[in-house]
Image (cartoon, rainbow, N blue to C red; front, side, top):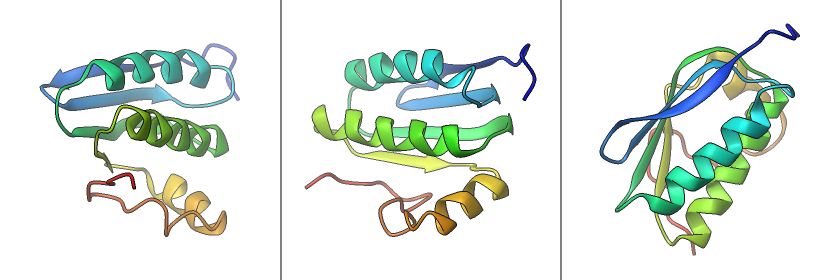
Length: 109
């Protein structure tokens, strides 16, 4: 893990958030907090685009689960797109695939 790693989440367009950089235990907390604010203030459904992520691991899985809970609290649907293959494999091995339908909106119940 590079101690100089950087990551951010920005509003790409209405309802679309873009995550970029390296998601690890050093960077994920700041990204999580920013994303939770953006999710709370969003109108309508939310898409989170991970195609700008260069490096990720289990910290990114935690981030996704936190944002899923934030969307549920705000009564908004959320969709995660552009996830790196490694992140998809970690999610599958963790047994979370059934809870995270990628590229499709997740509606809280």
